[in-house]
Structures are given as C-alpha cells and as structure tokens.
Length: 106
Image 1 (cartoon, helix red, strand yellow):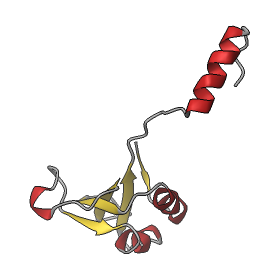
Image 2 (cartoon, rainbow, N blue to C red; image 1 turned 120 degrees about the vertical axis):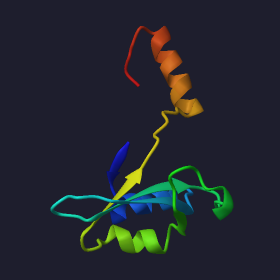
Image 3 (cartoon, rainbow, N blue to C red; image 1 turned 90 degrees about the horizontal axis):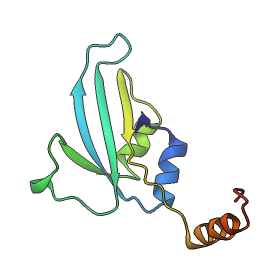
C-alpha cells in the first residue's frame, strides 16, 4: 500500500520500531508536483552498496523523513507500506473459544 506521508503516520512507524527509510526519487510531470519521493520504512540500517533495485539512498527516520512529512514545495512524498495481518496469541485463542460456542464475535 502506498499513502501520503504524514507526521502522525511517521510517529506510528517510529513507535513500531522502524529506524530507517529507503528512498526512491522520481521526476514526474504533474501540475502540483515535480518530484515524487517514495519512502519504505525498515528496521535495520541498509548498506548503501547493496540497496534494493530502484532505491537511491536511505534516511534515518527521525531526520529527513520528519522534515518531508511536514511538506516540501513541488514534491509529493509517499510511504510504501506492506501491511501483514497478524493476530496475537490472545486474539487467536479467543477466536477459537468463540468458534466453539458458535459465536463469531471477538
């Protein structure tokens, strides 16, 4: 999923343990922006020599991305999120209990 970077979203990612963002920069021909930056949060420091294909650089999440979240003229900044659904053990156990009782409420 790709969404606009906001300070609130950035704070959420920091709370979840993300420390760096991979950056992909593209020149676009839109009327409201001339540059498109896509950030992908990661939890470990990337190595510049072995960056994933398409990424230019990386940033410490509390530095440049924090400034980008506040807005940059003629630039759209997106964050690329790969959301994985996971249930805690408690939720999983409760679901099994409720399924046994023929109830689908959590």
